[in-house]
Image (cartoon, rainbow, N blue to C red; front, side):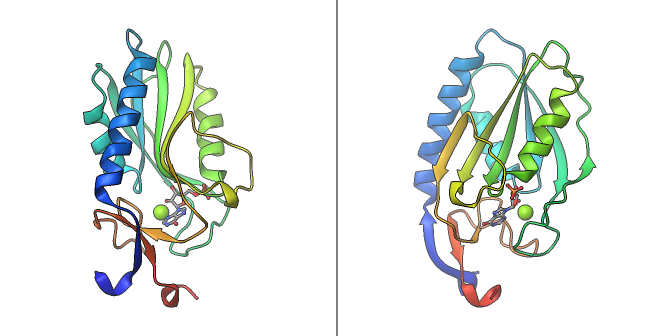
Amino acid sequence: MNEYIDSVLVTKEEIAAMVSRLGEQISNEYRGKNLVVVGVLKGGFVFMADLVRAINIPCQMDFISVSSYGCSTKSSGVVRLIKDIDIPLNDKHLLIVEDIIDTGLTLTYLKEMFKARNPLSVKICTAFDKPSRRKVEIKAEFCGIEIPDEYVIGYGLDFKEKLRNIPDLCILKRKFYE
Ligand code: IMP
Ligand code: MG
């Protein structure tokens, strides 16, 4: 997979430290509350798997699948719901777990969609954040690591549906998308 990697942006050790910090914050915030953690597929699955094991309070888990990019490296702005959660959200606190916030379009759509189901609260946890690329204002209450405007792969993030299995967060070589 090395032929795709320009450089490592965040090492797996730095990611592990970030995950423990977020797990602790989330456990403190939701202790004694009914928490549902919802992972956004597909990109969020690696982070979700690590994060829930860093959370030390009981919580329900579910997944939602959306498609925002299709197979290109640019956001289309169109969010398509492919799979919904099956857990009802009334009397629950909802935490949405995403791999990365880029334009913010995906999470804005999801947050509004979930709010309409009247949970007690809706918050966002993201592993990575590219604040410089925002098209709509949205902030994660729990944010891992801010990164510059680069196309990144690994730790769940794909290029053309591949390379999600790279353990570090890496910058994709420009020749693949320019
Ligand atoms: P947004 O709607 O523009 O915020 O995009 C969010 C989604 O786009 C993420 O969940 C990722 O799946 C994808 N995405 C954004 N930036 C990158 C990147 O650098 N590499 C791979 N996927 C990305
Ligand atoms: Mg993606």
